Length: 303
Length: 114
Image (cartoon, rainbow over all chains, first blue to last red; front, side, top):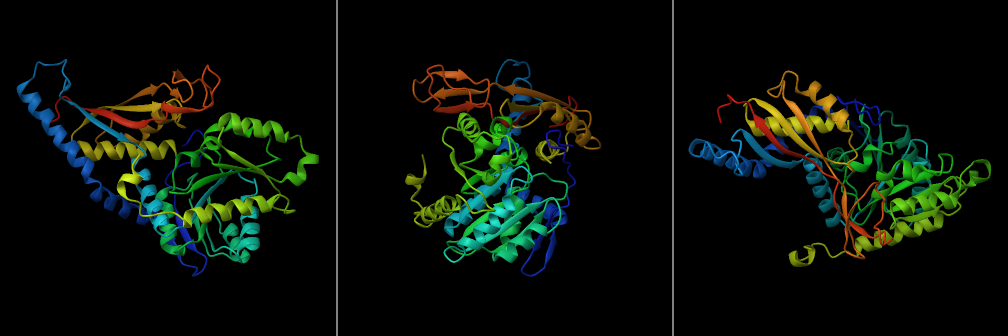
């Protein structure tokens, strides 16, 4: 149904806790949450309902004033963001993370860029210094989770069924299972897709885009939304550079064209080349998260 | 998901707000830089509203021009692409519009009792 990526809805979302083997079917739970959410959502609605009421009055008493603000009495101003619900849930996740000083990285890439191998390697090499938790997003199977579990990090798999991205609600359910600890690093491996995940905030500290040299150096301008949303770009599989037609400089120039502020690192998760820079980046970002001054006084937090 | 999921959210929001009254038009604002295909939204809308109180309603989509304000020279300019820089050459800008995805308003059936 989604013409951009070919996925459809009716998604059978499933959360599997690899520690306990417990599987949770979100499709049915989702409905519950929706109704809960609506119940809490009333603030806006109340306002708007009052608003409708005003219209009503105008309608009764001012029937002929077609050119005023309440011109057509049957038109109801709504002014609601379609992604407001996801944004609200993402904000809740973000506050949950901030209170626990957890660094959260949303790893995004096309399928096959090497996200899982990079995660495995990161967890294995850094776990003596850093506590990792992982949420794995895939349409189906727990294959990736098993690899991460073997590397030594607690992991929860979210299978999105026919869905093409993780959303903030799925992550919240994943958190309830995973319970990442204070001061840890949570790595979220999004569904392999360079389009849809760019739109859905999960509450992460940063999006990290991964692009492998086997994919073509013009990916950043072919999928500009994703590269604009990312804070860091990891160009992976550089050990294969001699064998592929991939201009490293051109790729970096395209990425900076789309996002002048993006940080770029080149590495190979297989040979280990360049990994230290990535590891240092994680450690520094985690330290910043832990040195955070949450909760901030209101006047300092407001722009 | 994506377009279909987004349309479902739109229909859910309007249905809830209209409280059982018939709706004949829904107006959406979609920024040209919002990663959403308007045609896909229209296609999904007809499918999603079937059998609901929004059945038969039309979806009006207003595309919003992407505007940015240059942080170097202060000029406001239209962006052709996501990375169009200001005429002064600076790439440091603040996006003012073009990433909207909102339900602007909806119109009730003429005979709907408010």
